[in-house]
Amino acid sequence: MHRKEDFHSAPTQDFLEFFQEETHLEPQPLTRAPVRGWIQVAFWGLRIYIVVMLVMVAIGFARGSH
Image (cartoon, rainbow, N blue to C red; front, side):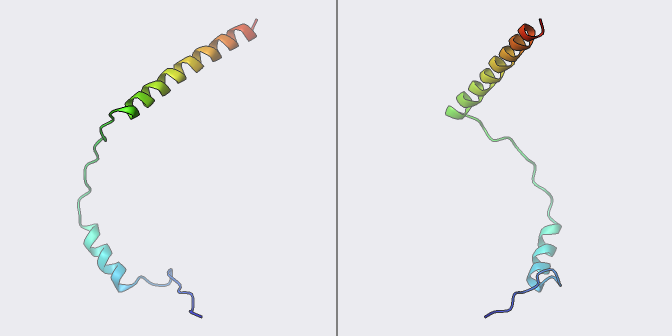
């Protein structure tokens, strides 16, 4: 049976080399992914659904407050 390693005790040399290589890099700018096809239709459907639900809640609230 193998002894369970304690990864919190000290960083390994491999990790230190990796960390040294990666920390000097500049972050890449984030860009939006193009939304096309059925995904765009699904997003518009969700928007319409939210508007309809808000209208229904408003109607229910208006009728319930009398």
